[in-house]
Length: 267
Image (cartoon, rainbow, N blue to C red; front, side):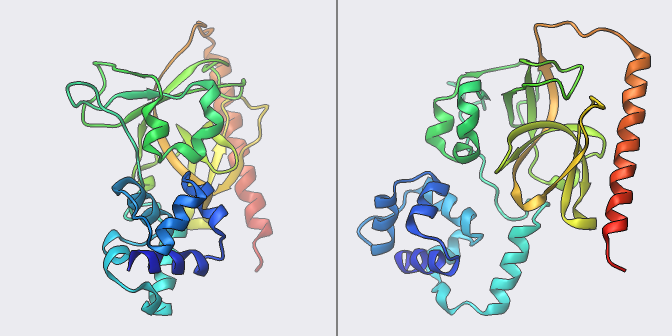
C-alpha cells in the first residue's frame, strides 16, 4: 500500500522523482525503492513524506489514496496552502543532551544555505553545534541563527539571534520581531504583521527605515521563530529619539503598503 501511495502522490502532484527526492533531502534511488516496494521508509522519512504531501500517516500506510474523492483532495490542498494554525503537522527535527533535554542548535553561517532543505532532516540538525541557556524555558524549543546586514538595528551585522519555535502562526503579535524561514530567501529576521486573512501573506518590515516593507506568501514560509534574545559583540548606541523616529517611519511604511494593496484590489 505504501509504495502505491507514494507513486500516486508524486504523479498527482506533477513532480518527478528527482524533484521530490531533492525537496525531501533523500537520494533518488532511495525514493525509487520506496515506490517500487523494494525498500520501506524509516519513521523519520515517513513523517517527512506525510508532511510533504499533507497526508496523515494513517492514510499513507493504510488507505488507498487513489480512491480518495476530489472533495477530500480539495480540502487537503486548502489546508496545505493556508495552515497557519499548525493543525497539520509541521516537522521540527531536534537534538537532546545527555539528560534528554532539548538542545539549542546553532546554525553556522556556512550552514545557512542548506537550512531551507535540511531543517526537517534529523541528519542535518544532528551535526549542528549545540548549547544550553539555563534561563530559557525547558518546555519550549529554541534555535539560534546568524544575522547579516543592517536592516534590523539595534541588532547589528554578525549578531546571533535566538528564537522560540512557533507552531501556530496565529500567535504572531503584529509589530514584533520574528525569524522567518522561507523557501526563496532562507533565514530572515524582521518585524512581522499577519495579513493571512486579508491576502494570504505576511508583511515583513525592517527597523531600519531605509529598507521598504515587503510581503511574502504564507505558503512559501517553512518555519517561524519568535525572537527571544540576541548575542552581539557590539554595544548599541542609546538614542531614544532615533528609535521613536524609526517606529514612526515603520508605521507609515506599513500604512502606505496597505493603501497600495487597497488601490490594487479590483472593485
